[in-house]
Amino acid sequence: HGKDELCRLFRPPPFLPGMGLGLLNLAFALVYGWTTAEKEAMELRERRTADLLRQSQSKALQNQLEPHVLYNALSSLSELVYEDPLAAEDVITRLADLYRMLTTHGKASETLLAEERKLVEAYLAMEQMRLGERLRVSWEWPEWADGIRMPPFFLQPLVENAIKHGISPSDRGGELRISACREGDEILLRVANSGRPPSENPARGVGLGNLESRLALWNQGPGAFTLRQEGEWTVAAVRWIARSSG
Image (spheres, rainbow, N blue to C red):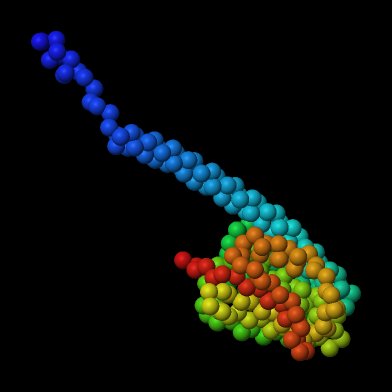
């Protein structure tokens, strides 16, 4: 009798169909949770790898652009040496200042649009000495634009291209209009010039080609860069999703 009582105490509970279903659900939940966690970890690693790749590509493109800007500035200086040696001396001083700005500007992955504007103003001051009255510049620049964040060299290539291919080759020169505006969540920069119109199928130079490549890496939507004719004006424009300075 005592032996039977002991067996009843240690006898496993009867197996019920509901218990089997519960164990199956538990096993499925564990496998699903492990699979989901592993998938999320893999996606995170892929995103980090993609971000590092974009950063390295963007930095390589910025490094390509800095000597290009200096090369064009030196080309402008070489023209001025023969035409006006005294003015060329002043331009050499401005070129040294421009080089310092380029070095600082190109090190950052992002910058304020105010800093880009200062770089453009320094570049235009140097070109103004070369072109004189043939270069007329106007700005449509609201106060909020200075606080917008962007990668370096979004505006400068547009200005440089307008002078090199539009205003400089024209005997009468032309006007350069630089503007910034908002369109919904997007920032739009426009550089319009009234100089020589581009050819029917203009080739992308180093500056604009570089800009397009960096926009593709940084911008969140298509149609970030355009170059078209609007009446007598050649208009280069770049747009991107606004990011707060804070």
